[in-house]
Length: 383
Ligand code: SF4
Image 1 (cartoon, rainbow, N blue to C red):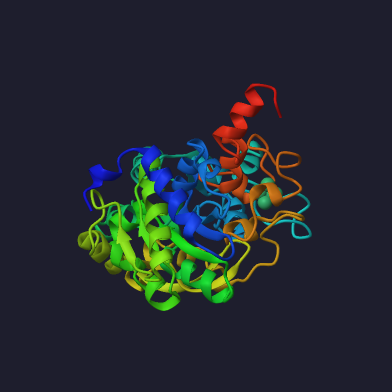
Image 2 (cartoon, rainbow, N blue to C red; image 1 turned 90 degrees about the vertical axis):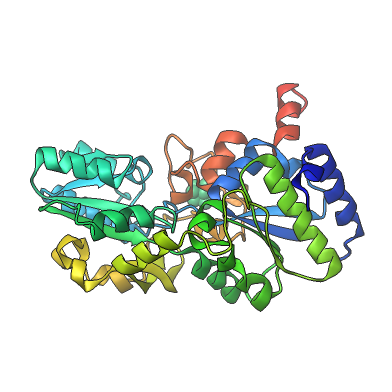
């Protein structure tokens, strides 16, 4: 379809409402997988523009939120034992394991306050530069989905990681977590999926073909402008109406069907696919990356004997009362958590979904989950 015909949000919303009216039965739940989509939806008030029978729910697309607590405990222990830790800003504030394993979940920021050498970086390359200048022993906490894995792989395969530096590989894979979501909740109320645009630039749109094929759920790879998301919703509803679930690539300006083959080859050269733990969810089959044996010299798991990290299923990922596991699977909204904006706020996060700017709880806390209509009502003092 000519994109120009759907370039007005008014028209797209009208189309959404018209199709939604014609759908009978229960509320249509559409999962927006990616934290950036959730940001667009909340920031632009898209949720508040939906007809009553269409509900948008956030998915597991925040890599910081799903980084298991025992990985954070491990790098904190390394930091307190004299190893410099390089971390992204988000993971700096990510809490480790909950009581009874620790009195209070610790963060890398706490470790730094205790005198540990913790350095916030924007990229692995920045960490490499810093290590070359300062020497010593260091570890880089490599968190991220398929979008960031190629930069890790490039540095490793091209021999750029200097002596004394290792990488703790926490890269996670997104199609397996979607499969897990649908398998675990066979009666999943999700009837449509907005697939992640960033990840798809690497994996290709084809990575999501299994959702309509195996689960009969319409899926649209979408960009991040408000109209991209609205168009994706219209496509999903149209597929539901016709009873012909399929895969649509709405983000053709950035996503190819096959993705970025060079990046895929690089990651494959560097890493193997392994079962991996997700915060609050436990082990998800074939959902993580581990360095191949030939790169053991830069692998923190090998160098520090952290083999147990690979298969550990952890019960204390979430502090008491935190509902991040349900938020991650689209089974609860951030506002369903009684701690939301009480014990848990962006400035003082209690659970992992409040830490990163991509976490659903953080997005809702900063921009209001209700959307523009509620905000205008609030501004006018009518709430
Ligand atoms: S509001 Fe905080 S405690 Fe509640 S689910 Fe979200 S991150 Fe967890």
